[in-house]
Length: 71
Image (cartoon, rainbow, N blue to C red):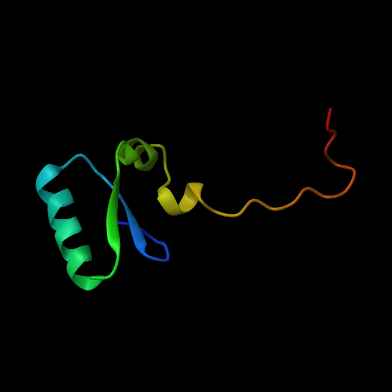
């Protein structure tokens, strides 16, 4: 299971397996008692496409000068 740890929240991708998703929330809540665990619904589709929450929240590099036309 992947998770994204923010300042006071943990984004946890729901995998659409109720029993295991609930267990993951329980464990994360115990390990990080001062954080709110937030379930990300529909995250299983991201995994099936070959990535996860951390993949789609990565920084994007800046374009090299002169390589992108705007407008």
